[in-house]
Image (cartoon, rainbow, N blue to C red):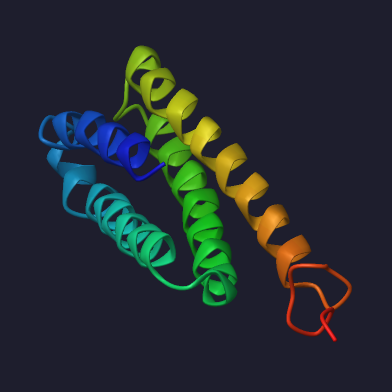
Length: 122
């Protein structure tokens, strides 16, 4: 999934360079910062022990949801063309679905009744 996020960020970065200055240094900067935070929290979730992953995955989901809204605002303000918005929205939607699935899987694995959890073992 980290590879998908990186690829989507590279698409964003190309657009970030050419969006109008009125948004590049305000909303564009906020969106770019969110992308970096998403990469950082996702990388952390990828490389830490399973029982510690859930808070990082949830944090990444929150950032992706915020990213979706801010990109929509940028598009509605006319600083992203339709095809640019679509080329970002499709992979972001897929990333969100993957994160949701990962979160659900981690919740099941970490639940006290799960056969894989320490609380479930006797």
